[in-house]
Image (cartoon, helix red, strand yellow):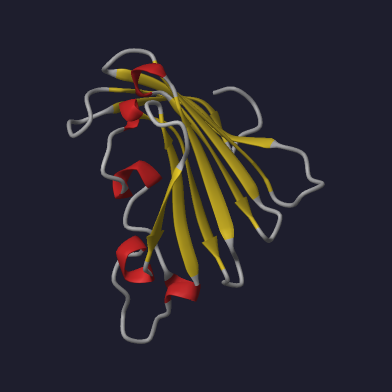
Length: 151
């Protein structure tokens, strides 16, 4: 298994690459589990593994390779903490999430996916989250994957 995080800081002319061991990237396993089949990343975003914050970064790219379901996740960082990430798996599955921060207390999230390369994109979710991180939050759903019409 090979795990690499490549990232580009605004101030640097070239990207940097960080190589991680599975124990650094994934949560601890039970005795009968393997990282290849059961590994769950410790963090939701590559930025959380890096020695910098999202305001310093243009983009990150995680590559988890040499396993049956290899994948990559590229994240673009924008003003005010907004971001977009794109996950691609060797199975053909892809997912895109766009998080737009409206204010310090509100963000709008849209998630799309397709199950294989020739499939059409489908909206999983569109909604607004209100409230400060770490405090009770309120969610207003506009589109939910269980419904094929606006809520």
